[in-house]
Amino acid sequence: MKKVEFLIIGQGLAGTLLAFEMLQAGVDFKIVNSPKKSKASVVAAGMTNPLVFRRMTKSWMVDELMPVMKTTYRKLEELLSDLFYFEKNILKPLSEQEKELWLERKNNPEFDAYVGAVLDKSPNKYLTEASGYGIVNGSGYLNLVQFLSSSETFFKGKGLLLESDLVLKNDVVSFTDFQIENISADKIVFCEGYHVMHNSVFDFVKMKPVKGEVLEIYSSELSEEYILNKKCFVLPIGNQRFKVGSTYEWKDLSEQTTAAGAASICECLENLVLVDYKIEKHSAGVRPSVIDRRPILGQHPKHKNIFIFNGLGTKGVMLAPYFAKEMLRFITEENHILSPEIDVQRFLA
Ligand SMILES: Cc1cc2nc3c(=O)[nH]c(=O)nc-3n(C[C@H](O)[C@H](O)[C@H](O)COP(=O)(O)OP(=O)(O)OC[C@H]3O[C@@H](n4cnc5c(N)ncnc54)[C@H](O)[C@@H]3O)c2cc1C
Image (cartoon, rainbow, N blue to C red):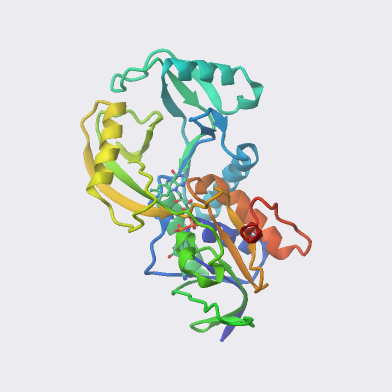
């Protein structure tokens, strides 16, 4: 039996970033990832948008999250000798009313880093008519498939990743340690994405998972200069391929793609651009969203050697680097207190 201090359960975005933090801090751990369960991270478009267009506000904590996000992915690109984070401006077609609000924000120094110029004319002939086209600065995307597969190779190469499914029984009075195959650990961190809904130890956590579908299309006509965003997004990923999406569905959490999902994405795409395109891929996944839309970090109220890092919701790419650091501090520094807004204990109040 090999003994380690921590098991990380799940190698999606949450588990992977926490594992890199632990590695850097010299914490003794192994990752356990189920080969059978789905992974939202590999379906996600990976887009990062610092703004919430509906009210033209900044995304929650964006000024703190953005710098940590960028330096973390750049450092990991160096470590893994790979490229997966790309900066790209978003172009948002605007109505007359939205244009007014955009220009108002542009004059507000608080928005300097994110709200760019408004173009009066469309930068390419395929975009449908609008009163103006607002440019978002500081946006981009993470190629999650590339990042997670590079990370998997890295952790497997170091003997730190095990493919298995871990289930805990809730009727145990106290866990002295956790065993899986030939590994045993004193402590465990669950980074299970929406599958935490089936983890009886965390049955008090109020998740509100959201299924999403995404298309990958080929179009020789579409410009790759900007990420387009109006009701749906069109994200250039290279070689005239684009991710287009996504849908939001709360009732059907089946993880299957649907004809209705594809049709609604195509309709949105065709309202945005007039181009020929071919659908090359159609995927579905379930976002680990939470009723109060905040990440979940912390310690189990009864079992002090069980932890959780989850709730990355719709904005995992921006949230995960910052909160993986916060999670590491919480589990390694004795007096580190979590903000009540993100602490798992909030569900007991
Ligand atoms: C359609 C769609 C579009 C999205 N677009 C974006 C976007 O543009 N930008 C953005 O920032 N975010 C986006 N997201 C959200 C993003 O995918 C999530 O926030 C993030 O990937 C969640 O990561 P996670 O690690 O918490 O969960 P997951 O990626 O689901 O990973 C959980 C992992 O845990 C493993 N696991 C679970 N239970 C066990 C167990 N008991 N034992 C062993 N292993 C286990 C699973 O196998 C899986 O590998 C999108 C999501 C979807 C579905």
